[in-house]
Image (tube, rainbow, N blue to C red):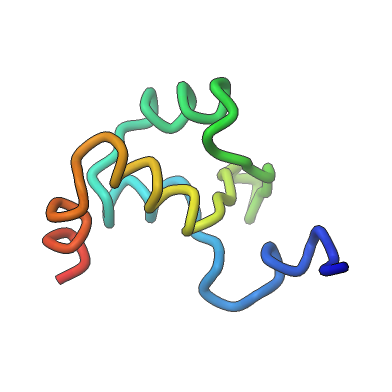
Length: 78
């Protein structure tokens, strides 16, 4: 059985909420709603006293695909 933390530790598998906003065009409200709805898992972190949320990239991509479609996701990656 794979360790539950393995995905959180794998390089490139996570991103910050700020990066999710920039890369995928999500708003803070959309991210919070998705977390509350159970569509996104997050871990709270802080760097130099500044809090941020760490999100799983595959879940963020699935959320964007669900909201805007696959073509939107492909366009945002370019």
